[in-house]
Amino acid sequence: MAFESLSDKLQNVFKNLRGKGKLSEADVKTALKEVKMALLEADVSFKVVKQFIKSVQERAVGAEVMNGLNPGQMVIKIVNEELISLMGSEMTEIALKPGGEITVIMMVGLQGAGKTTTTAKIAAKLKSKGRVPLLTACDVYRPAAIQQLQINGERVGVEVFSMGDKQNPVNIAKAAIEHAKAHNMNVVILDTAGRLHVDEDMMNELVQIKEAVNVDQTILVVDAMTGQDAVNVSERFNDKIGIDGVILTKLDGDSRGGAALSIKATCGKPILYAGMGEKLSDLEPFYPDRMASRILGMGDVMTLIEKAQANVDEAKAKEMEQKLKKATFGFDDYLESMQQMKNMGGISSILSMMPGMGGSKMKEIEGMIDEKALARTEAIILSMTPQERSNPEILNPSRKKRIAAGSGVDINEVNRLVKQFEQSRKMMKQLPGMMGQMGKRGRFKLPF
Image 1 (cartoon, helix red, strand yellow):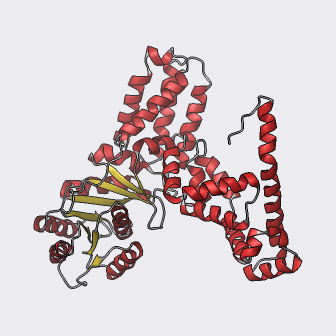
Image 2 (cartoon, helix red, strand yellow):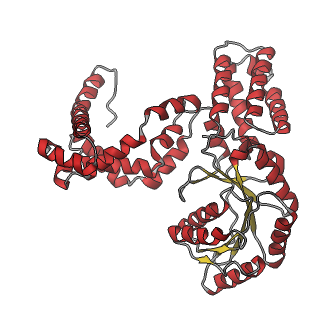
Image 3 (tube, helix red, strand yellow):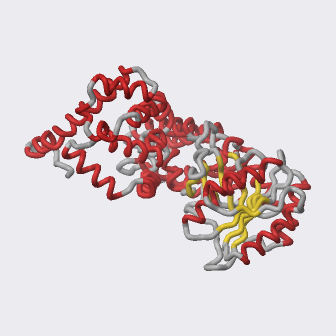
């Protein structure tokens, strides 16, 4: 995640505060000085940092905090609340007109920020909510832009309106709205041209589109990895054409992430979504409270629950639970659980949302997770027959040899997987009994 370094530094500051029984004003000021440096290094705007530290200090240097039962925790609570306030307090959605009325959304941004891909991601989100969107190719300058939008539109099952690269973007926008009216579509998303930098021609074209058609929402797409530049771009677009919200892309990258903490405070516009990966499904609503929680190393359990609800079949999950209890869990079930983890973004993504897993801890664990080994495991299981997957006991040496050849691995890898699987099943079989015994002794209560 973009805030790994910041997360580590803040957690170290707060570790020192937690160890103190009482806090002096000097303790708070020393801690906040370190917080200030950590935020500046994360590329948060200097003005924003200055105001943030002032707000925290005013609340933290008080008798209620200093003499409280747990003053260190109180300071952390204040920092958390101020971080949430800084990023906009609550999640903001794209404002849509009711029913069959057409909402026109204009997507803007610099070239390379991921605008065209994000445009398709937004269309997919709106489609999943029952809307009928139309993607519109208004970028007539970049040869691959129209084709890219068409490919992505096909992937998410949304129609793309294009008039080629010889027409004026204003005329394309007008024609797209007429097409949407004729075909009962209720959202028109205009993918406008990006430039390598903000220039007058670019801004004039956007102004002309807004003058020619009734644009309801102007959404700016910025690259979180550009740090303070992302904030500057947001301010310039807002000043020149007026924006209604921002989408941050590449927030899963190795950037310092200061843009997420600065944009709302500097241009007054909310962050609507955060791009967390390359896939067309990797677009998360931006919840300031959840992002603050991630930054402070407290995890993001709510997003994890939502991902699980969206990607895990409840009936299958219950069935798998029963199989685990009875130790009838087979390789097909193992494959199913791997697929569900993939749908939720993979093991790394799941672990990153767990409390205490931010920063360098996450890097250590990522180093231990061998994604290639997981892919080989999948290949081995897929090389088994349905009978072998449901009855691993029948896997004799000749069958293992065939599976190894079919999956392109050494037979030792097949043996290792089968052995690990058998040990896991034995452990699962013993687990309810062991937990029951511990429950009787009063040390542990059986969870099922």
